[in-house]
Image 1: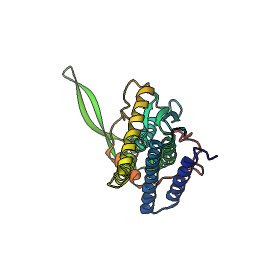
Image 2 (image 1 turned 90 degrees about the horizontal axis):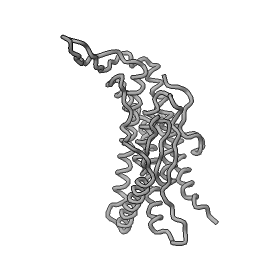
Image 3 (image 1 turned 30 degrees about the horizontal axis):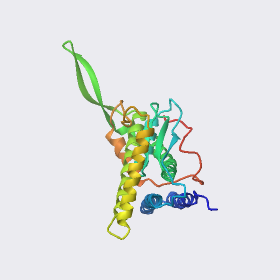
Image 4 (image 1 turned 60 degrees about the horizontal axis):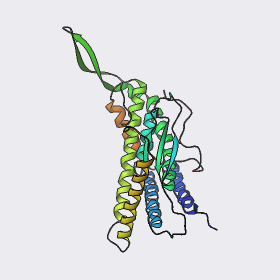
Length: 280
């Protein structure tokens, strides 16, 4: 008897091959092509699974949405909110809804198993690259030439007056700004690929109507599941840098996000995106 997870396992194996190819090339254009191919495969596979779910025989067990806890890091670790931002950006492009723990130590992912698996594989790869790229940026000293906008409160004539000033960028501020821009760029890249693939999938053809209907059914099923299962009391607003906004650090992070290669550990089932070394 064939395992019901065989198709999903095969999909992850193919995605893993593309990730390893992306990781092994130093050619930015090749890396970009592998990135697009990996996201295309993930999106196409999701569509195929959706169509299959819509036509599954009554005697077969129908795949349904589930909730999974994604560990992000230990309480008190710096930069967890940018890690969460990266995972949420990936999830948004792969039909996965997210709730975030107040401490940002974990994410509650809502979606179909194959979609959540894809998110974890992409996140594991991209998190390593984001941290590595921000480390390189800080160690290079480039951030020292940048300034940051800060609001200073002064007393004048017995009143408190706010004034915007330019101040040197602290390493932790530069790192957080860099990672925020990196995660945002990754989200836009994956969203563009998803939009393109879905447009192709529902383009006029004999099967387009069925595909569009299946996609809509999947969206409604996930929306209903999330509404029934989520215990969130508010909306996650993303990371905030109270120390200030560094244009230079964000530009550097955006460039790194544009050039990011998808990479992964030898096995897709490896540890899920937690790093043990601290961010300074």
